[in-house]
Length: 117
Image (cartoon, rainbow, N blue to C red; front, side, top):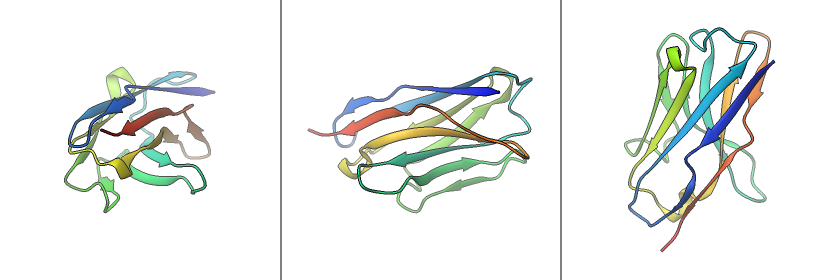
């Protein structure tokens, strides 16, 4: 079993920045073989993909965050990050870390991000 723990959420003013972190632990050597991603969800809406880091290195972003958010990973530290710049009120959501192996998928507990003046 693999556990994912997010951190770094909080309250920030519009235009500000936050950096989310996700650390994987448990029955895992490292995350190099895993696809790692960040999703977000607001009340009453489905969880949506924000950014994806594939194990082969390709990165994908939702159109709404392109140019503002950057996903990165440090396989040696079993960590994935989401740098969020130029934050907007519509970025307010619970952000979840996601990890996918060949046959299994893991989710973190989520971290709240609120963008408000």
